[in-house]
Length: 153
Ligand SMILES: CC(C)(COP(=O)(O)OP(=O)(O)OC[C@H]1O[C@@H](n2cnc3c(N)ncnc32)[C@H](O)[C@@H]1OP(=O)(O)O)[C@@H](O)C(=O)NCCC(=O)NCCS
Image (cartoon, rainbow, N blue to C red; front, top):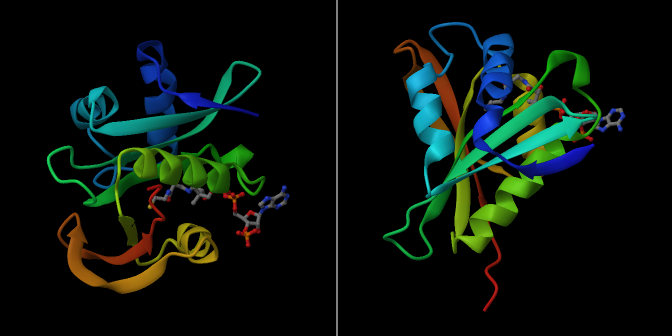
C-alpha cells in the first residue's frame, strides 16, 4: 500500500469513495469536498494500491493560531479494503500533518452509531469529550473525540 498526499487529478476517485461510504444527507457535497482538498490549511492523504485509490483522509488546522487544535474532517476506506490497517495508517498520517502544522491537539466528530470508526479512534488514544445532539443532518447525534499531540520543540 502506498500512502501519499493528494494531487489535483485524484478528485474523481476520491469522490467515488465518498459516494460509496456515505449517503445523503451525511455525504459531503462535491463543492465542499473540492474546497477541503484544495485548502492550504489542510492535508489530504491518499492510500493507493497498484494505482487504485483504496482510501483517503483529511485534516484541517488553523494557520492564524499557533498550537490550535487540528480537526479531522473524514477518514474513508473502500468497503472491500477495510480491516487491513489502512484506516489506522491514514489516521497516523493525519496526526503527523497536524503536528507539522503546530497543532497541539486533534479532534473530530463521529456518528453515534459508527462503531468501526469509534473503535479506530479509541484504539489510537482518542478520548471521548462529549456528545453533540443534532450534529448530523440536524437529528443525528455526534460524539466528540480528541487526542493531545506531542509538539517538537
Ligand atoms: C472507519 C474506517 C475508516 C476504518 O478503516 P479500516 O481500514 O477498516 O481500519 P483498520 O483496518 O485500520 O482498523 C480496523 C480494525 O481492523 C482490524 N485490522 C487492522 N489491521 C488488520 C490486518 N492486517 N488484518 C486483519 N484485521 C486488521 C483490527 O481489528 C482493527 O482494529 P484494532 O485497532 O483493534 O487493531 C472504515 O470502516 C470506513 O471507511 N468507514 C466508513 C467511513 C466512515 O465512517 N469514516 C469515519 C468518519 S468519522
